[in-house]
Amino acid sequence: MTNVRPDAPYPVLLERYDQDIRENPKNYLKRVERALLVLEQRDTGRTTAEDIDTLLSHSEWRNEGLRLNAIRLHHQKRFDEAMSLIQENIRNNIHVREQSRLLADIELFRRDTNGAIDAYHTAWAKDSDETDYIDLLDLQSGRGNPPEELLQQGLHRYPRSAGSIQSIFEVYSAAGDSGSLQKALQVSDRAINTLWPLSVDWKIRHARVLISLKRPREAKPVLLAALDLLDEDVRLKGSDSEPVRKQIFTLLEVVRK
Image 1 (cartoon, one colour):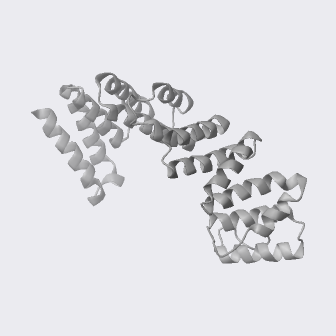
Image 2 (tube, rainbow, N blue to C red):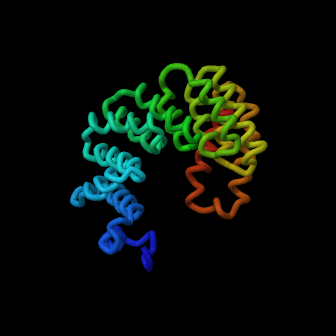
Image 3 (cartoon, rainbow, N blue to C red):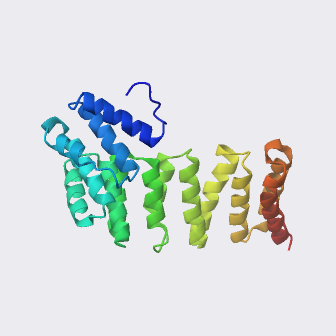
């Protein structure tokens, strides 16, 4: 697809794919890319049937056709057909992560949280993708005790990931019991002392946990350090810093009581 930027508007990209495929109908890779483009745009006025049927009819491209057909059925909300095909694709190792996320979406639509958790587990087991982990953690949280094994797996696999570590911290913190708060404190302690010592947000999180554990004297210097960072960093000056500054002063009032 020459002379067209990949971030060009959808109609421009689509017209270029159409032109390339008219010139070479056997360019099966272009057919995959065109079908994906249409499906990603949820363009209900444009059919992908021609591309999918063409791919399905050639053994070396059949898996791509099966993958695309599952996405199409999902988008069309033909969920019974989609689930059957998705499950078959997963068994046959066809784009397992993508297909598992489609399956999870259907299970959530049907309010089957356990089915969605199983699907996300399959996706995460395939590629250990951090996005799958965070989504899985979000689904499993709020269902009784914190999912300890999953939380510890995240700390082990993503020891320096801001997204995963914050999600793990929030699960422990939200649980509210003493044991979970102690684990949240361990996470935030590592964040403020090792990973992100210049982070105001992490200092505030750490102080909140200390307050919840009824250790206000220890929270006060953490909050004052956060305030100093706020004052020193020119990027944090101005109206944008006011909500953060208000949080700190509110917490300082709590620890002074």
